[in-house]
Length: 289
Length: 261
Figure 1 (cartoon, rainbow over the protein chains, first blue to last red):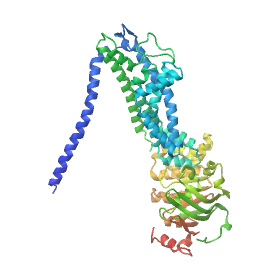
Figure 2: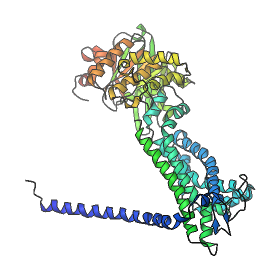
Figure 3: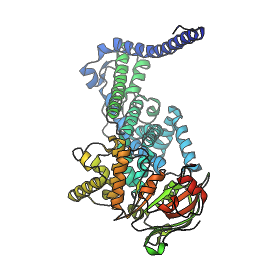
Figure 4: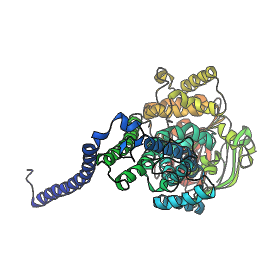
């Protein structure tokens, strides 16, 4: 009764073939990640210690720790966030909730998408011209962070806009119909339901910012500083640039040190990504409609 | 088109509509509709899909403000005041409660759903809000079912409960006019009958516009009924006249007797 006809058999073998192809593709994607992480942990883990994380480098960076670079990266990311999040979220709210659908809005949307595609080295030169030279911030944490902020703005705007748009229009209409202004609707209904999505986008953005090298190396990050930065107008060391330096610029570097630095950097990024994933899972559990 | 039954002069006109036309970019939705809705009546609007019924409600609530494609011509008066000249449209909308075809439980607690409109209007006194919430939920025949879980999410109630929640929310505005747009589409028959009973009671205090695709629902509830077809209002009159009495357009009789639509 259920015997397979030739066509059935053909469909079944095709089904198996495609399943295998897609599975193999996925496996080949995971492989490099496993290799990279494996190598980093295998070669870098031995140098990781409390002293490595929390002391200054010594002997021309071949010994000692990476504390100034670690601290510098955290500072750069934080200042960049302070600049990009309020600006990006405000712009996204305007574009999603207020802007009329006309050529001007469409042009802005197009510009944002294009801005996201600008290579980071171009942002670096822009930052050098605008913040370091024109605004006279000098090569400083402020200039470097603002450069990072400009670079991450489009992504913050796009992810925030997506989160806002995921709140159903019917909710807004219900509010408008009872006499709420647009702002009352945004504050009481739209934002509270979009905020976790916005946060997820921001955290993903942070992890990207932490790894960037080009935008900060002309604008505020330096190879080596004998002291920690005292304020936003000081220069700083940074993990990403430090990795570049210890891998290529310093003779007689013990092999384990660059691996250790890379491991710390990738560990930081993974930590933030997991925070973002945890947040999203928590969110899904609390789905409100 | 002509008006049947007692003339509008017999009762106070709550909502006057003169030569109302509504256009979208895709074409006209409503053409040249004139009718009066009187205080303390349930005014039914029946007609097939795309007749312009929902657009009619949107025009009354000035929702064209949020939709630049919607163009309104003609005159609507609320309590005798031309609403196109109302500066504070938010104040106008607060006097008009709206219930949608699909229930919209906002992603807030049951309590906050009902307390939202008073809060938007500036009422933040918890004791007063408690009174409003209990009163409105009771009137919407929902209080007994949710009184023990006022803090659970309104958007997770069942469809029928959410629709009653929507009605409670509309009532929390203390509206003078309640507009229901095919409220029973997503509601079971028992809940529908409970809501219909609520509406009959509410009529003593407020004016109700009942847009419905159920001809018999209009017959059960509406004092007067208008028949919309393809953006035109073909008949307005005492509801029973549409079924049995004198009417001006044969298509009205065909529709109410189920011969098309």
